[in-house]
Image (cartoon, rainbow, N blue to C red):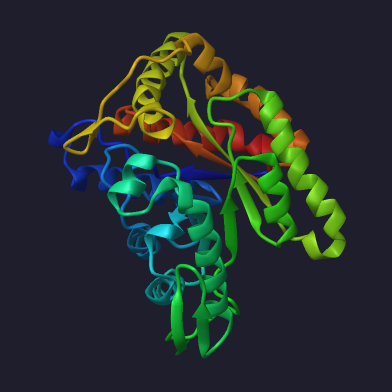
Length: 338
């Protein structure tokens, strides 16, 4: 089982500065490359101070310039926010500039606030995503592509430069619904999923849907992988664990506002809202614990056959503490799953 670091830039205070936030994320990528993490992953979000990354392909190129081996995943880019006729070329160039270390994770968009502020109604994101994905794949695989769909209509064109890798970088689909996981796997996509703060029953359903589809595909699905994203942090003591769980609970009070809540955002800052789930309940569902406890919690993931776990340590904790946690994770946890 491999491990990735989610560079989900959190920006709880404007006084900290966006330059410092992204320098913190770059430092995590450099450390990850040095200590053996398989990949780093980059979100795409706009107009909000949580998961703040409006330019993931640009950041992927920056990371590649400062590292040598670590893979760079977009998890995810929001296809309905882009014009595939220009975005396909940007993907090809980013794949070249990252020396073939890019994996393109794609999704439909989850936050109503950012989608609708950018002119995409939430009730049409599925249709837009499906057509955008088809257009993107066609442009990456074929020349002189024309289109006559609901959202795209254009005469024959060829994106330039052509992909170095046939069809462009490998593509990973972000999907949480088990039925969606099944159908996306059957279409030949790698899968990224997460139960967020949900329970183990949901996770088992997600993994089961992937495995069912992969088994039905036989050899055609042999190379497909399942990636799981979780908030995680290695702590030095039980008191440290309690402190970090409280920080995660505060983080989720903002995250939930834009994910499942009303989307109250003031001057780019998400307003924290009360949560029904207690800090203790949240802590039971996240991977915030001591190294030995982390090994125990990750064991079932390995038993389920999950290929990669993306750990997100960025939920408002001090930057130096976060680097220490990642170092500890690499030294004390990862060797048990080599």
